[in-house]
Amino acid sequence: MRKIMKQFIQGRSFWVTFFVIVMSAWYEAESQRVVSLTPSVTELIVDMGCSDVLVGRTSYCPNVNAVVVGDILSVNMEKVVSLKPDIVICVGFVEASTIEKMQKIGINVKSYKTPRSFDEMCRQTIEIGCLIGVADKAESIVKEERRRVEELKKKVVKTQKRVLFQIGTRPIFSVVDNTYTQGFIDDLGLINVSHTTMPSREYVVSQNPDYVILTTMGGLYKEESKVWQKLIKARIIVVDENMVCSPTPTNYRKSLEVLFDEIYGQ
Image (cartoon, rainbow, N blue to C red; front, side, top):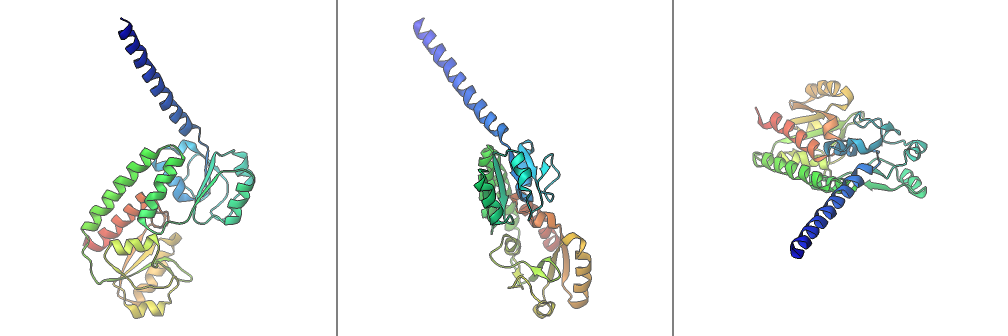
């Protein structure tokens, strides 16, 4: 009988301990108060099913129920402080001086550089998932998006076809090497005609690209499309700037699918 009782007590102890650990992890994740200063970070947190941890965001972020604390380049420090965040997360554009000011007054800030590749994007996603207590969910998203990107790449037939990938205008701003956007060109088996971020129209015409990919550029793609159609015979492809310019694994995969269908789905 004593042996049975001992096993029963040990069993109860195990389940009580297990329950405490699970509840502690749940509470830790639920108690996070996050300010996101980058649209891609906000999207990631929403994709992970954790929009409720967001207490602050920028005006460029998805419209979630959180206080707007500024735009990408300008942050209202008083608003951030008033939200009492456990952590502020940003990628890319936030100025170093702004980050330093927040750190000096005791705010926990995690800042990432803009990812230079899809792989780096995936690593950042997992890190951000760990920061808000949903590492498993982040890893699941990354695993699925990697699988889908790899499946798509297997269907690509590498050609010598040339492309200009334009993401800005006045002046022209194009995709170059050592950026995650160059990854679209590489994964689609194309050759980038631009080796500078601001090529002239004359230079692009001399390179005679087969495709000109335009992001929507706030609607300016319509004007750009007309200009290019007068100058070269390249096929014009338009892709949503909100997907291309917000580096998350899901956005990368979606953008790649759109471009693949346009180039190989004919």
